[in-house]
Length: 620
Image 1 (cartoon, helix red, strand yellow):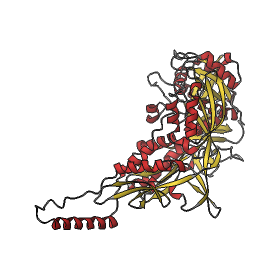
Image 2 (image 1 turned 90 degrees about the horizontal axis):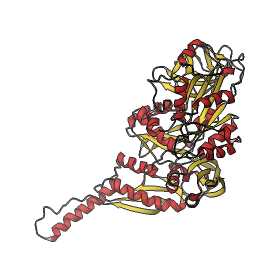
Image 3 (image 1 turned 30 degrees about the horizontal axis):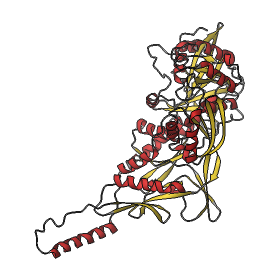
Image 4 (image 1 turned 180 degrees about the vertical axis):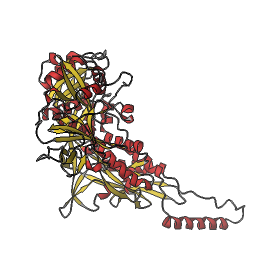
């Protein structure tokens, strides 16, 4: 169990592809804050792939936003050398996100591995998202290594939680490894266990080359950098490769492994994980899930790709400065390469101009994408209130799909189907009453409840997705003092009594403020938006009514009073009829202005009204 000093040395000693029997591909799956990135740091140090002077906390979290929030957003692959019983092995590790919104990142990482470390905080126990990722790993037939982290904490209960994990995975509690990512205790034993437990990759070394693209990033100078897992055959530098979905061919300018910085090698063989650089700047030519093969000896059929992620939440994204629209289009193209779960299409709004309708996997995903666009591409953006997809049946029995409140049909509709999700909530048993009360308020139905231990309970609810994606998690955390964890999975749709609430300014609809809500919540939404806009919209020369309406029926109203000029200031005494004449003249002018004037809504009002509607989606 001796680390080899430098991965760069390993690449120079073994410039050709490594023997598949000496490879181990694994990933780390866990809930947020259970110590994945810290454990990865200790592994990097122990295997000697990072120089001590260059070492920093959360080394694999490259983005500023990841380091600020303390969460992993992007999966990161790294190759590490490790020696056991005198045999040098190459370990390919993928550090995955833990948040429910980034499950698609995790699923792609699992497809590139043969084993997974199931990491659980020894002070908190298994969480809902950990369970979801564990089931994903089991579906992929991965070798599971259960590990308890943070055993150095005073509140740690390793024996109690070892039994809980052992019951889930089906192993003996004694075989659950106990480590500390912070101090490094038990990490060497874990690396040895990986070599012993995770099976070597299986593939045809002599067959036609086939490699699965599991990630891509855009480099300003080098173009698209594609990360692949080679399944069959071998890829060599300077050979021509072909993308099997588009039939596009490119020359391989560089091929290598991430350790954790890119190290060029003389090729990648079956079972290896590495990167390819072709110098291509067109981001659409490197699609996640595509199969790469050799142009001279192409494979007969492609590998099974990943299932496309289905967006859960839609929101409009508009540049504050209309001239930034082409920059936003290019920015979304480049971000799509880095975030395969992003879906978008152009749309226009009467109030906000040209923009995009963007689909996200959840509210945190929405927040991260918007922040990355603003930081990395220097854009100022407005995002409209998020909403889910509805299916609406019209009077002629036809169904239409509604992703935007402006698409909701006027007049009579026969049925509205909204997506529902199966939510799994894990919490201490003392909070059962609070959780039930919250779920009933959000139109939830209890499906079942199991005790994982004497003081921890798993509750399963069917909830409308629209109720989950906005502020459900914040409310859940508040009612359980932060102890509850949530995971959800969309399970079809159900009929619901939903209506579209329009906001009218001086009788004209403002599409950006429209929302599809449940009939029982329509009045409160209307009152809230009217009062908010009354504060945000500056006073005009004439009186402006703000109304919330369902169809033609107004359900709430506020009025912005007119700015009045003191036309009597020049009157010093005299007959009252002169004053009355001036006031009547002003009144006629105000009336005329009201009929021909338009309400100017400043951009700041849109930003304040729409962002405060979305709330604050903190990390789960």
